[in-house]
Structures are given as structure tokens and as C-alpha cells.
Length: 458
Ligand code: HEM
Image (cartoon, rainbow, N blue to C red; front, side):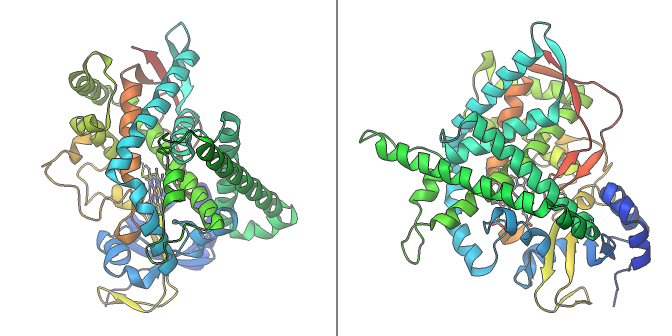
């Protein structure tokens, strides 16, 4: 029976600072040295199995998913964000998923495309103003991408019920909460210190304010709909869909507390991930001018004379999609997924005890040298229909897999394709510095510091 190699506790304790500083570099080294699945102590204290084995990922996420739930690493977010789709489990999760999923169906996305495009155009105009009359400037692309991604999801959820200032507050508070939360996971031995310094209280307070802000936006949305002239079509946003949705079993609407939790979760799950994917896509296009030229040629062919893209156009822009897919291979925004076994299980003869914690290391899967030829090269056409070799099954999981697959995956792909198209037709992106950016894996995979790119008006 194979046994997964164990990295001794003293080694991980000794390396825990290094691991906190550069988890990806350290995990890559460990897995290259010991095999695709290893046992180690996260943060020097937490026994965990880390894997970049596609078969084990499939086993946990799909084949044997009933025996696994997310761990307290995800459930810990409950304290700040509540019990929404991402943090929920079991029958309650399934009931919510059934209620919410129709909001992300194709025909609803088609409606949201116009809204996304409006946000993208506003953003590109803002970049043009920043670039100014000289027509070229160096901008940090990560905060810029965060602005547009947050606006896309916030406007898709709330329509016009949130003002600019409230949007900014929401974004700032969510970022602060996530950064603090990840810090407490990575360096658990600092928890007493955070507690003494009142940092838990501070972030609890931010979470309370966040909830109040979201509640007020729901109130404004309800009031605006109630005051609308009879015959005015209901808003096309996700909040309206959630307000109108009824449970299959009882026919009741979602209770308000649950609604607030779901809204919080949609905002969190739906903006940082897309922002990171967009920032990394811009960086990769700047680094690979030939790919950028190919993308522009596709856009000019399919959308001549600057025609605005509609939902139906996106399927005629396959290279734009491939750029997004390859970006998320090299820089998976969700770089690790956590699961814990709720009962005894077995994988390829290896017994799995109840309580075993797994970290499914998506970054490791996506860079695995035996799954991907020239795994470090940026080659969007790997994802072209009929490409040989085809992307490996369960070797590419940017949106997870199985029943907990990202509910917003089509939303995100649509958004990313649209925003990139509107950006690249107006700007040429170029590197502002040669050095490769460092990685900062928080809940999502961000660039380590600034990600400066030269934006040149076309
Ligand atoms: C590039 C963008 C995105 C990436 C890479 C991404 C990735 C993921 C992944 C990997 C999961 C599964 C987590 C797990 O199994 O532990 C997930 C779940 C989820 N995502 Fe996304 N996501 C993205 C965009 C979005 C957007 C735009 C939304 C909503 C507007 C969203 C909402 C959610 C929700 C609600 C869940 C929980 C689903 C459930 O468990 O039922 N995501 N996402």
C-alpha cells in the first residue's frame, strides 16, 4: 500500500516563516522532492495532505465528494461573511445552490453582458483619463483590475443601489478582512497577539459595518422597485433574482439574514478572483506582444469598426477565451482548495482517516511538468478546440470541480473576455520592468507588489 511521505513537524516548524513568506515556492520544492502528494504541518502545526495529483483531486472533489466538506480554513470566513454558498455545507448548501444557480444561467448572463460592458467602457475611459494627453503612462494594473472587477460584480448584484463611495468602502473592508483572516491561518501562533491587540474586534466591527451597508443597499433596491411606475420592467440584476426566487419545497422567499450572507459571499467570491485573473492576463499580454497582436487581430476581424461586443459575439472570439484560460492555468486565482474527510475513505489503497485535511494544490496541478508540455510557457492555444495534447482531465481546475464547482464560472469567463476585448482594442500593453512579478497567495493569488505596465493608447 503506498503511503504519502511525511515531512517531519520540526522541518515544517523550522520552515514556517519561509512558508508564510513564499508558500508556493516552498510547496513546489517539497512536491518536486517528495512526490505529488505529501503530508506536512501547515504553519508548522496543522497536519495536512497537500496534493497535485489529478486522480486524488478528482477523487475528493467528484467521485467521493460526499465524504468531504470544506475545512475550518474556509468555514472560518463564516465569522466575517456569514453562511453563503461558499461557506455552507450539506442539505442547506444544496437548497441554496438550487435557488441561486438559475441566476447564473445563460440567458441571464446575456442580460448582464450589457451591464458588464458598460462597466468595462467606463473603466477604459477612466484609464484613458489617467494616461492623459501624452497617450502613454505606467499604471499598476492590479488595483485597476480590482476596481473594474469589483464594479462588475457589485453592479451585477446590486444594479444601481450602491453609490461609488459605498462601493469603495465595501471593497476596502472586504480586502482588509480577507488579508487579516489569511494572516491568522498562515501564522496561527500569532493569534494570541492579534487578540491582545484587539485586531479580532476591529475586523468583527468591519464585518458588522459591511453587513449594514449591504442591508441598506437591499433596502434601497426594494424601495426603488416598489416606487417604479407600473409596467416598468424589474431590474435585471442578481439581487432582484434572489428577491424573486422561491424555494422548491416551501415556495417561500429567502430569509433576509440568509440573503445578506449570500450577497456578502457573492461579492467576495466574485471580485478578487476575477481581478487577479484580469491583472495577470494584462501582464501576460504585455510580456507576449505576439499574443496581444493575435488577440487584436481577432477583435478587429470579428468586431470591425470598433463595434461593441454582444454576448453572442463572445463565441466568435475564441482566442480571447484561450488567453483567459491559459492565464488561469499559470496564475490560478484560487490556488488551493481545502477539504476535510468526514468519514473513513480510501484512495488507491491508501487509507484516509476521518478528519484528514487536504489541500488540493491547484497551482501545482496547473504547473505540473508531466501534465503540461513546457509547463511554464504561456501558450493560449493549448486550449484551442482539438489541441493536442488536450488539457489533462483534472489537471486544470481553475473553478474547482464536482458539485461545488464555481457557480460564477460562466459569469467570470464572460466578464474577463469582455473586459480584455474592450481594453486591448484601446490600449497596447507593454512591460514597464523586466523582472518577473512575485506571487502573493492570500485567499487568492495576487501579485506580490505592484504590477506596473505601460498603457499606450492605440
Ligand atoms: C476568475 C474568476 C473566478 C475563479 C477563478 C473562481 C474560482 C472558484 C473556485 C475554485 C470555487 C470552488 C471552491 C471550492 O471548491 O472549494 C469557487 C466557488 C464559488 N464561486 Fe467562484 N471563481 C471566480 C469567479 C466567481 C464569480 C464572478 C462569482 C459570482 C459572481 C463566484 C462565485 C462563487 C461561489 C458563490 C462559489 C461557491 C459555490 C458553491 O460552493 O456552491 N465566483 N469559485
